[in-house]
Image (cartoon, rainbow, N blue to C red):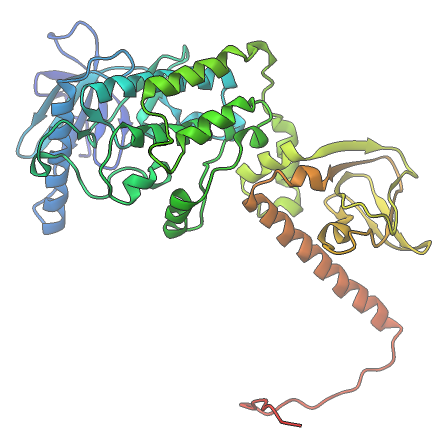
Length: 453
C-alpha cells in the first residue's frame, strides 16, 4: 500500500508508528475509545499460489490472536480490542503503548543497569505465568515482542503464534510448524515436541541473558550449528561476560536454560521469585555506563578490524589499559609469562640477546609468541618502551573467561602477526645471504609419485 488510508473501518488513522514485512501499524482514534489506539493493518496480496498460501497463514495467525485476546487481561500484556478479517484486508486494534522494543537494549553499549533489566524480566515472567494459567503459551518470546517505556512499564505483544494448550484435539490447535525465532527457541520447540509454559520461560531466559551480556547465549555461523548448540551445549556464565552481574544470576539463567524440562523453572512465578531475590541484593547507584571512548579506540585499530562490536565490548572487559614512561621493560626474553600487549600510542623496542631487531608503534602487537607457545610459554624477546607509551595488556587468566568466538579472533590475528613477521625476518636475512640456486619449473600436469625404497 503506497499511501496511508484516511480511515480503516470505523477508525481514523493519525500517523504511521511502525512497519513490518506483512503489516503497518498506525496510531488511530475512534469515538468508541476515549484514548488513541494502535491499529495493525494488513492488506492481502494477489492470488498467486505462494501468496495465497501465505495469506491463509496470516489469517490463521490473526484468528489465533483474536481467540487469545478474549482470554488475556493483564497489565503487562497488550490488550487487543478487536480483530477484523475481510476478503482483501485485515486489522487488529489494540491498546496504544508508547514504548520501544527490548531490541534497543540488547547491544553491550546500550545495556540497561542490571537492576532495571531484572525488573523488566520479572514483569514478563509474571505476565507469562498469568497467560499460562489462562491456557496460553506465547511461543515467540523475543526482545522484538516485548515493549518497555522510559519508566520500565512492560507490555508483551504479538500473541498471534500462541498455542492454546487447553484445546482437546490437534485439529483444533493453532499450531503452525516452525513458528518462533530460532535464536530464542527452546530445545523442545526445535524438536517439535509438545509445548507447555516452560518453552516461554526458556525463551525469556535467552532474552534475560541477551540483555545482561549484550550477546546471545548460543551463537553460530549457520542455522544448523545454532540448533545443535541450543540442544546440546550450555550457555556461558553471564557474570563472567559482564562483571556488573552478580554470580547469583548465573544460577537463575542456568535454571531458565535447562535442556531437561524437569530441571527448568516450573512456572513464571518461580522464576520471578528468584529474580526478585537477586534484585534485592543489588545496589542501584553503582551502575557505571560502558566506556564508549575506549570502544572507539579499539574500533579504529587495525588489529581489531575483523572483531564484531560484540567481541570488542568483550575485549574491553578482559583487558587492562596501561601508560608508562620511556625506558621501562615491559617483558623479558626467556620469562615464562604469557602476557601480550598492543601499542596504543608511543613506541617499543624489541631485542634478542641485547641486540635490537624491531621497533613497534601504534596498532602493533608484542609478546604474542609466548601466548601462542603452548609448550614453553616463554617470551622470545625483550620489550622496552622508547618513549611515554600507552598500551593494552592481555593476561591468560582474563582471556580464559573469553567466549570461544572472541578467543578464535585473537588467535587468528596473532597467528597472522607472527606469520608476517617471520616473512619480514626472512627477507632481512636474505639480504646478507648467498645467491639462491635457480631450479627448473615442473612441467604442466606433472604429478609427484611415491617411490618405494
